[in-house]
Image (tube, rainbow, N blue to C red):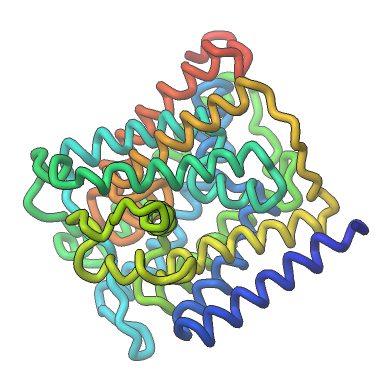
Length: 381
C-alpha cells in the first residue's frame, strides 16, 4: 500500500458508512456518521484525551490537558445552556441529560477511571487511537464492548442500590445565566489552580502543542463544535459507550444468549439490539470516529499498526477495557457521555462523575507506576 492508500480507504469507508446510514437508517444516522468523522479527525490531530491529561496532572504536575478540558466544557456550556433553557433550536427540540446520583454510578465512575489509566485511553481515546492504527487499543475496544454488556445482564441489582430520586438541573435551579456563571467559575478555578501547581513544580508551563499535529487548545475548540453540532442535529448531548453496550448485546444475541430477555434491553432498547451495527445514532457516530481518525492518521503519514504486543500490553488492555465497559454502564456513561455530557447539560451528576472518576483515575495512575507502565516520579503520588 502506498502512503495515501489508507487515507483513500478511510475516506471510502466513511462515505460508505454515510451512504448506508442515510439509505438504511435515517437522516439522523447520516448526521451521526458525519459528526463522528469530524470528531475522529479532531481527536487524532490534537491527541485530545481525558486520560493523559489527568495522569499528567497527578504524575508530573503538568496541567495542559486539564486546562484544555476546562476550555472545552466552558465553551459548550456557554452556547448550550441558553439552547437547553429554551428547549429547541431552529424548531429542533434539544434536551440535556439530567440523571440521578447514587452508589452504583459512583462505583462505576471509580471503575471507569481506573480502567482508563490501565487501558491508556478513555472511550473517545480508545476509538481515535484504535482508528489511528493502535492494535493494542483495538484489544481495549473489544473488551470495552464486552464489559459494557455484562452489567446489563443483572441490571436489576445495580438499579436497586441507593440513589437520588431524580437528577438535579443547574439550569432549572439557577436559570441559564446563573448556571453558566457557576460552571465558568468552576472551570476558571481549576484552570488557575493547574497553572499555579505547574509553575511551582516546573517554573513555566509546557508547550500547548506537544507531539500532536494540532495544539491542544485547537482540539478543545474543535470538540466543542462537534458536541454542539451533535446537540443541534440530534437533539441530545454526544455519547459513546451506549453504542458499545449495543454491539455487545448484538454479539451476545448472535451467540444465542438472548439479551432481549434481560430487563435492560426491553422497550426501545430492544430495537437497537435487533438492528444492525448502525442501529443507534451512537453506534453510527462511533464508527464515524474510527473512520475519521484513520483518515487523519493516514493523511499525516502516521497510520502504521504494530502487531507485536507484550504480555503486559495485552493484560492491561483486557483489564482496562473490561473495567471501562462495566463502569461506564453503571455510571450512565464515560468521560464524554456522563462527565462532559452531564456538565454541559447542567446536570449535577456530571460533577458527581468527575469526583469519583478522578478518584478512580488516581488509583489507576498509582497502579500504572506499581506495574512499571510509568516511571515513578519524584513527589508526585
